[in-house]
Length: 163
Image 1 (cartoon, rainbow, N blue to C red):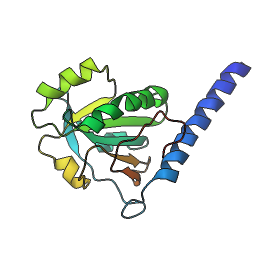
Image 2: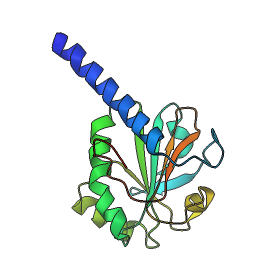
Image 3: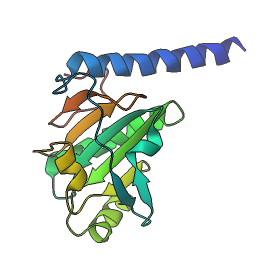
Image 4: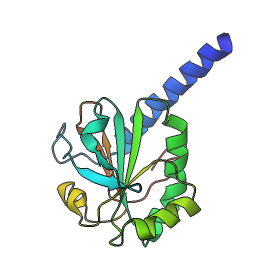
């Protein structure tokens, strides 16, 4: 029983540490507490997924593309982050800007054994709504739906402390 309690405490502290590190290294959102723009995009199975479905969770939204070298380098650490927190109050949405959609993205996802939610933004609607100007770009959204972290560059989400 003690081991189970210690494990739960360790996971809770780890999750809080991640949030703290994200906040400490964050660039300020243009307006603190700005509500993240909602979007509805298709996943690799053709099903529609909306950001609003994840209200009540911390959501990491990552804009990327298969042709983007830094994006590809970042993907394993995003997978590690997802595996670490997927059973917590956390969701990871990776939004592909590949113009050929699932035809290009699905083989990449399978080859790299990515298990988090992949969405397709071929017309850049969500990307434009978030003001994305470079890839990868990452946004963290709190359970109330407000932006509290942005990064317009790649990160190693598995590192003990992010720069």
